[in-house]
Length: 378
Image (cartoon, rainbow, N blue to C red; front, side):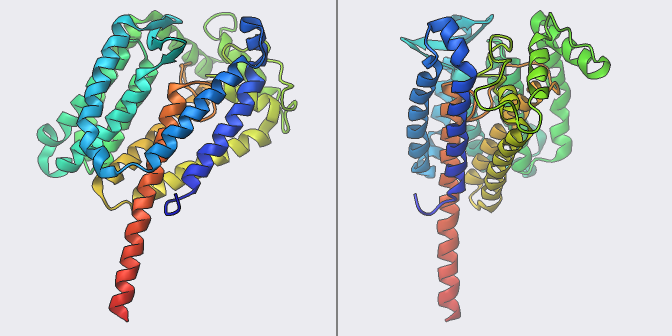
């Protein structure tokens, strides 16, 4: 691994190492309460990080032409997995999102979102949307992305379904689809979201809580706004420098799931404004380098693949941060590379490996071009 953009490996590794530290800090009390072991979640996450490293370095060496040929098969595998989890998945907190394999659980949504990006890059390379118009160029990939989002929505998992649909939308824009053609499906997507909210009361209650907080300052502290209340208390009590690593109070059974959805709140309380600023800088650098690779890719498949993966990482990070600060309704999306979790971490580290692979292909082509121009000028 000497040719690609090393920042695309170094930054995810730094974020993951930082996440290990914060997962231990955020989950030690929870581990004592549930398993009588303060290290339970740390050891689980260390094992998952090991698997993630294998996935990252395997994807960093994969042949992109082979990955392109596998694109339809990857999507074909993800569809039955989503159907299985919707019908007979492991249920937790009212949603069936996991497949249990012995002591391990796997969330097919994370595999499906990667497979969908790979498939869209494969499909749009062969059928550019601009010259084909709406029905032949834009509608088919939108239907595919919408169908995958619908399968995820069946779990139910509204937030992941929305972000997958938005990713498909952005990949189509990156492929050159005309803006008027992209605006047409927005109304249908809005109707789908409205239908999901109406048929799932707990999601509607989260939206009501968010709207009440955003426009009226009413958080509903003892009801659906309890998580947001504890999150804001944690963030507000961090100050400039924080209480100190490991010294946070809200993680001590006040803030629900402090090691997953609301790990940003623990970081803010313990490391303060300077700590979260450093975290945001790391994410900004990662997204900048990933967008740089996307812009420099001359192969259309690599260009769309890198763009889709970058959009996914950025969207998940933005939504998690917005939820923790009250700028979006509460969801169950983790903070990429940092939050506790297995399949999400594997998917994100695999995405980082693929981004590095695209950057290495870019650098090889640039080296060949520089060599060619130097020979011609000699």
